[in-house]
Length: 227
Image 1 (spheres, rainbow, N blue to C red):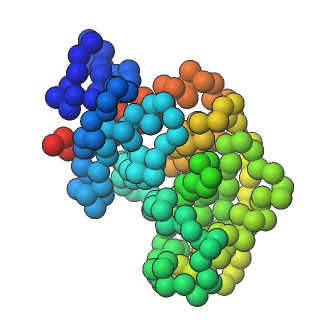
Image 2 (image 1 turned 45 degrees about the horizontal axis):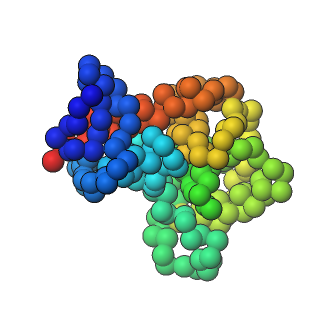
């Protein structure tokens, strides 16, 4: 085992995959900068949390943007997780959500939206062509939550794009998390299914979840410009 020059990543002897991040006295080091994503930065503590705990906003956003950018032919946009964090508290005529013309929405194949509330990630895929919003909660979709989500996302579309016509929430069978910390990993996996035009995974055992965590971290390190 050895430490990289960043002094907080530990890799195996073949330098093939990250095993874990140093937990004792972690260094607040920038592990990657992504000029094509507006200079977004990833820090060591974000990668540490990715391997062991819940995912951070920046990990979710950058990973999804990297996946989308690898599919140049697709008309896909990723909404920053911070874009809706306070939506329920915002007045309907707020200026805090920057207005865009509705034509910008209908140019898209899909708008991918991973949102976190009370430390739990959910996924919504806004599909303008058929005016639907596939919605996925890694713990399942209670009936009483579907109408709330539908109202929330339609309110966002009205605020953001001036859309009056209502979009409909759709749900599909999918794998469900069996712990309290993997919701973000599940959402990234489901989003990747949509980006690749695949069916949602219906089984996602813990060993695959952990392998996917490492895949996320590895991609962020591979694509980030090291300082």
